[in-house]
Image 1 (cartoon, rainbow, N blue to C red):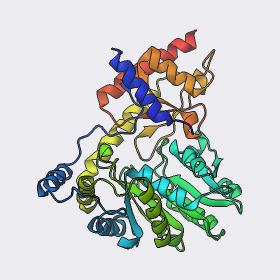
Image 2: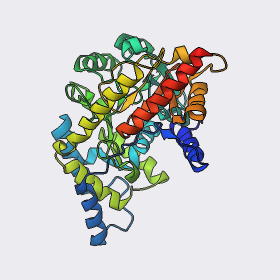
Image 3: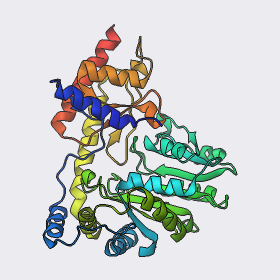
Length: 385
């Protein structure tokens, strides 16, 4: 199993900073904003109540699962009963539970690229084979649905994707989701894992869930959590809505690995999913401003090319022009920029997108401006050598 590239780069950045180096870390997808006040108040209340200290149910407290059921209907138009909801220690564990429940040796999982770094490794851990469907910047980092259809075989057990997408910020349109659903419905038994952790960070239009389309609810596992939209990455709460048989299987897996998620964190999650999404609209506004700041800055970096992300908080520039001399891969370039410019980015190879780097703009404007200035200077120096 490969180490997570994002976590590896974040660790290297911490080590260099601890050694006295001035590092601007744009490697982790972690909002720098403070969590909303109502989330912290829920934590304080839960601690004061002194009744959430015992082992929680493996699937999560029933009142939280009921609140998530209501949230799915309110925000996404998805009809998952509380019995079809399960709470995990982060969306990462939620996805791992489902993959271990559905995938085994001989099974294939189709993954459009670029993709979140853990998807392929999670599939391999379960004994399955990840089938990567690549795309280009010119395609807005979204493989045409026809290309995804070509990758599906009788061995395909799962189609796994995120929208908005980490690492590119691309968003599937309603028309693309409908085309994708039509492909899935041609294959009996093919399940979809739809990672919607960035649902509240969409810059144009509204977020759409594939499970709302005819025939897709019983074929879809919808994944979400409180980390990104509520700036609560450290509280580690994710959840799924899924057919009951999938939830029952995931319950067995989680019961043998970790049991229930942290009790106090579950009370925080309940406050978050019950909150009016309008209360976190400012987060999206911040990220839109930062996106434009980053795109305008990267436009001045010699040779780098970007699409225009419609969601999440990442930019995935094509950096082919900077792969010169001994810098043959995006991993080489990311280390060069870390060591020579003091900027931490993640290689695109880890996301199934060679010749790119992922930049997270989930940090302050001043740091983003400083990072881009350093990048531009370092890249210009490469071009002049």
